[in-house]
Length: 453
Ligand code: IFM
View 1 (spheres, rainbow, N blue to C red):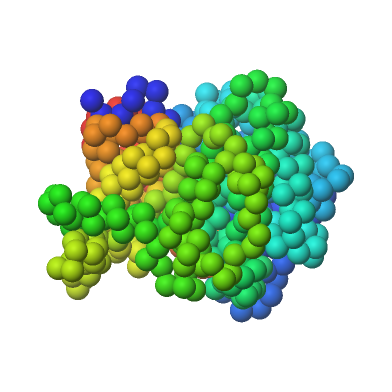
View 2: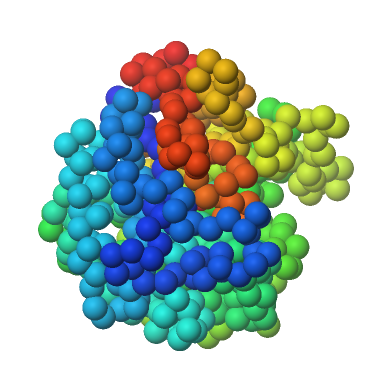
């Protein structure tokens, strides 16, 4: 069986992480520009000012995507590049950049998948309260309308938000991502509610102003749970763990259902409503109707998961990894099973076609003496994870596509350029790109539609 014939094999990036040109051609400031200017925020004082210089080199980058044989490319639009103040005056030079990128992709036979928000909140909107201000629902709606009006003549696939768990959790609870704020917990629930309403408004406007039939989805993340064995009780324990609220209070934003039940079912989960009762904002029926605008597919970013078994007390219990357990350069555990059980549980619950919108790992890659980049760890990781994804599809989940994170090495947020997630190596001193061994391996995998896994 394997993967569908029309499976979308792709790679993903985000605007701030690759574009650079942070102060060019009329772009407005976003919260990451401001965050990176401050000393001590990002490893080594790195910034996204230049990043991979993709803004100027997108032509070369599309050529590389063609060489990799990508069928799809997921990228994001920097809100502040097209609407420098977040609303109002449109920056036509910014629009032109994305428009030309889209044309180049289509000419190369690569399907563009646009993400509206991969964390670049315009600074002007941050000053007005950002996600805490309910008006952001309309601001985001205006932005979505613009994107739809300008690009939906050629682009058919859109995602609203990337990883709300992170941009609220890391940005406003931990304060380690922009805007670097440790907000009161009550405020973070209000922000989350506004984020979900903004998502709904974007779905509505993307569709309402589209120039052709388009498909709209959502790309959250969260830790997946998987069973320690094939025993039915362990499987049940993993499912229960995945669908519950195991997070410590100050990590609430990492929950999967809090961010997805409202979107798919129009309701917050009962367990969460009880647990977080005293911090919640006013939630109306109209809000829930807006949040649950029908979407066409469900995206999930998956990197690792929790191993779970049934405890003696009949409750799920986490299983500790043995000492020396395989891990990535970022110390994330290598748990391939999460790419079978995660989408399986999600499909069981939400019954929507699923895209893996991000998956991959950071490795200590270097250009070797032979001028090539040998990254066997990445090939091994991808083989193991994609075998699990194939299993998931063969067991009946409707898996439509897979986007490797990332197309190329890039600015890894608070870690700056210290981490390398790409299929393409970037030498930041010269901006030279080198396709890694894993890139050639991925090309072959795409050609074989995963049959060689
Ligand atoms: O680089 C990030 C991406 O922006 C969001 N998801 C996780 C990736 C790796 O940390």
